[in-house]
Image 1 (tube, helix red, strand yellow):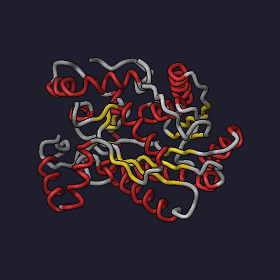
Image 2 (image 1 turned 90 degrees about the vertical axis):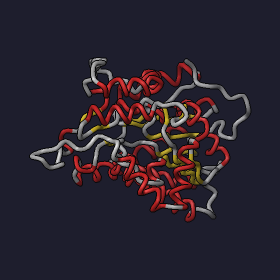
Image 3 (image 1 turned 135 degrees about the vertical axis):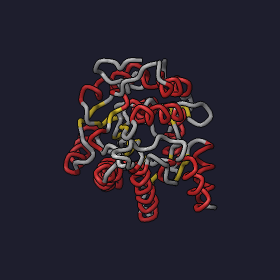
Length: 342
């Protein structure tokens, strides 16, 4: 498998770029697309071995050489240090993509406030740390800096069983719009991207609570269903094109655009429809007859959930998520530990 090539000249050629969450999934593909266009790319993520595998993946497919930086975006000082180091080592900083995040899938009855705090700290706090550290450096860019914040359709409307994620992504969307407005007179641009479902293999890294195997089944099946979900390489290409054109806002996938438009026109109706849809999702486990369920300490990552072909949830998952499973293998989402049963 090779990353799709671009033949036209790019106005990003020769620029320095930093991508957070760049070691796997969408971040990995964004790093590859930027390297393809001649950028000097620095990939940042928390796991050093995952970063190295990701850099090798990009270098093999693009012929470029990438730099890596171990960084937890929740740590403001660490982010500021990586931004400074990138500017110094690359002779400037022209592009920053804030992509790092976490996905938590569970009914709200199986969560407590800690889940919301963690989502806000990683998704929104990490984006704020990245953007605020990057802005002074991007303003100094001779090419005119470009900042890209990766939101989600989940930030345009609340998605059942993804409430912490939706809240944090909504905050990212507001941040992007506000920064764009307040930097309108500067030479830099701020682009906010709201992807819909993408086949990146992120279901293996997502965290699942409540009836975790059933939550995993519906999420991975839906995220891998053609038409509803988007090919990850095409999504990465669209995002980089938006950076080239200094677009203000991009919503990816027709389903995401339709959902965002419907919510803007008739929010109460969309909320009622979401309530109907939530009835088809797995309920929280009952405890003593109440839907109290297991709290955040029982959350499992997708790669650690035991799956067997004999269960109906696994059959549903396999029906919809074959393409997403393939994406996980391609885009560095596979967990390096022992494989789960399948």
